[in-house]
Length: 272
Image (cartoon, rainbow, N blue to C red; front, side, top):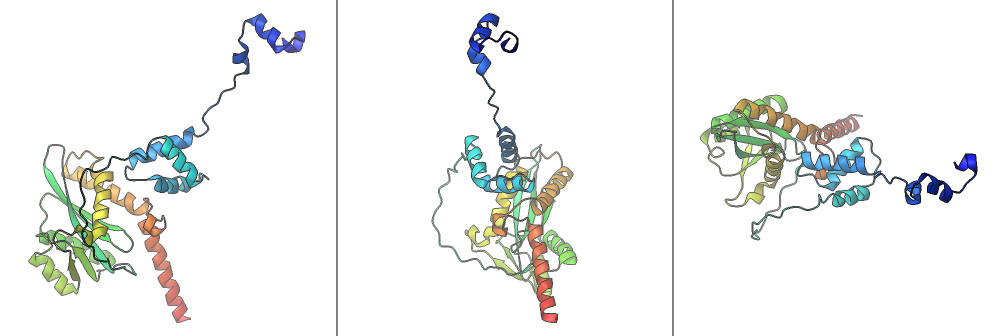
């Protein structure tokens, strides 16, 4: 009507009965909706991930964004609200953890318990390389004894060698004669944490917390075989995909590979 009859917008809207506010309205679509959806999906699927780790995953997908923007959207979705634990922590003296300098220098082992859908309990033996944070194995069984622990260690020894020492607690499987005899034969030292001091083996305690929150509490296990399959899938995801802030936001396998490259470079430097 404006072009044909040369009338104003006011006159044209009056003729067709259209409110001028409707004519002038322009949609304000949220340009951040896709990014907010990605952040919500990551936070729902990986319950222990904060905004910094989500930022790393988004950058891996090729999204050129700033960590401040991710934090702002993270807070807008109320994902920064966490339920605080009701437990009261008592201040206890801690011993300084020894810093490892290479792969296979130190491993850490512990047990985590869970149950199937029908209430039957099962246990998992978790083993972590404390230098690369790589989860070497998660053995699943209903009754794990000292001989089972030795069998798992012998399998790992055949594929990647043996450590100098292993950090364990004072559980009956770790003080068994079978494990003590294997450690003596292979020249591996067993470092036992002090009774009632889980911080002495902080690396495995931290890993077990992630394992429980990201795997055991988010899956429904129908059988022992089903538990083994889902736990092994999570272990591979942990080693190959999950970024670690202590490793420069690299995965354990990426960090371990970089250490191998550094060692080769040192050997070449000494050779030539």
